[in-house]
Length: 210
Ligand SMILES: CSCCC(=O)C(=O)COP(=O)(O)O
Ligand SMILES: [Mg+2]
Image (cartoon, rainbow, N blue to C red; front, side):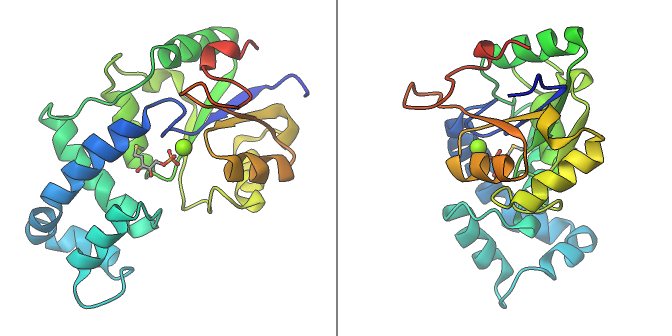
């Protein structure tokens, strides 16, 4: 692998636990979805226009239950979670090695970008209101599904172009093999991480020494 100039990180299962997303964030969105839509009619109109069916709330709840990575759902979730972070009910989970790695790379001049199915607004919230404090000053940029699916090589080509780095100078880290395969197909370096110690390239961001 060429020496990376920048790192691109997945969130759920990589910087942060899957349980935080599925057992804290998703239930918070389920609880507040209908109320948020009722109270923010102007904001939600363009988002709901992208949701099929007559009963938008029911469709969105189904999508949350099946963990659908649909852009309108992710946009809405980000807006709903903003309330929870603002009132202090939500604090973004990060593994202890996440802020350590961000600090190490930041000090070494290695740019760090995020690529998650969660909306860019939701990404800024989880790192801005994390249990380790505000980590956003150490992040150089954010990408979500508006750039494309995480399972398609073209998305990684677009991200590389947006960062101004050649793909081979970017190192992507994710817990999903399909995402690793797509990043490698675009010419990026990529490491599969398994936070539970299963078969993978790494088990902690502490293992990445640049
Ligand atoms: C930005 S925190 C919310 C995470 C989320 O909604 C999600 O779908 C996580 O997907 P990822 O691509 O980070 O595995
Ligand atoms: Mg993930």
